[in-house]
Length: 268
Image 1 (spheres, one colour):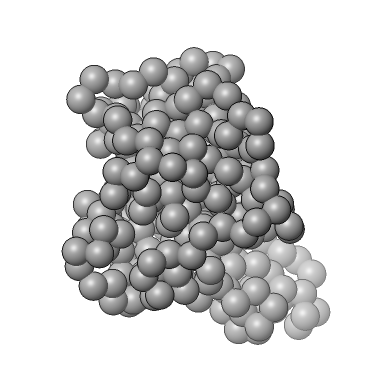
Image 2 (image 1 turned 90 degrees about the vertical axis):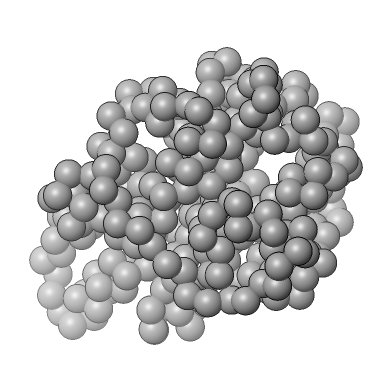
């Protein structure tokens, strides 16, 4: 498959506030210390939407803007793909609690904010983007599924594509069934040709053998490996580590049960 180029990255998660900070952690130059994810209010949203925006929306907007700024691409100009393993944990919990208590008159606003495609709508409101946008969900393989969708969209449109993968924690009792401990979000701004002086890495979906039965490799840092296993969107960390270290080689990402996505990665 034709290579694509990573021009900008945004990342936010427990103990990680930006791509610049993540680089030091992924290269082993700083010690990773897990701590609660810190969110920034989405100032680009109008006041009414800002009040309704969930923590997952805030995280997705934050990393999306970071990736676009690094690439020098206006957020409104890129097509987009949003990937998540599920909907908004807080709102899903509130709806389930209301249903369990016998109140079947669920707020329409809560309902349309509960689903994972709400983030795409908030991105459009915040940026004024009118470019094509896709939303995918594939449980624990959602980052890999989103990357496949983004590469397909990129090679079809031949215009920059922003991939944002994000997940947020679930409160009790949903946490018992879906133990996601915190918020994690990542954004990649992808192009079909490298931007001079900006490209961070080249990615190619392995041509003859794009899928493998062997599991993805573990992170060298035990705590970062725990993070990658705990939050579906953080399954991107082996790829981010390869980019940060400017490695050349294959990366295997979790996708479907017993099927893993193989990427060929090289620095630019």
